[in-house]
Image (cartoon, rainbow, N blue to C red; front, side, top):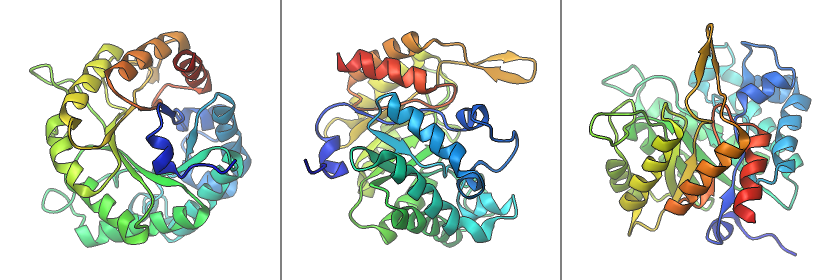
Length: 299
């Protein structure tokens, strides 16, 4: 049977993406403190193993190990000249695991700085970096792109424009990171509320909008999903939700996530009830968390 194109599949009910990558890479043997993106070239077996565990957990799509694989972030590791090669390798790795039955999303994370005048990054430089990343991902065989963990809408706009300059056809999913804020409506670090995000991002020609990461507890993520569902009404955009495994606890200088897979699955079911159709996990989640969620929501 011919697999549906990703945009068609997203319209046909709940769609699961994977969970945390960084912590899973460490568990698989990656050195702590290394450039995770470079593992796609230096230690591909570790990356492949993480993707495979998520596929085995029942997700529909894996996300490439390229969260920081733009030239600006890679430049801090002395690897800016390897951006295209890293993204190409990452997409090929994910594609080799996903095969023809599952999907691959090319991951584009923030640059770690602010656009002028708040920061030192120009729009042209940032767009060039994101476009180079998107080219590598596209040439490696992704089915679509996810622009995630964003906090500023101007960076989202640059990323969306960059992706569309490389690929006019593949879907783009956008996800922002939220923290608790006064008044009960979560906001990003740059003060963006769901209503503002929906209003401005809907005009960017993307397919889905939602949230990942941040510092909310599970009740906060459920409330955020409700706020987004209201904000997205009438926009035609799908709601994407990739919450952390709750709020972490500190164990010395280490953040520890203690939420069980079953509790995560129950919270994700509530988020689904609010209207989210693209579901996954972020920090602290594991293949076990996603397996519990896929079992619960597909019963």
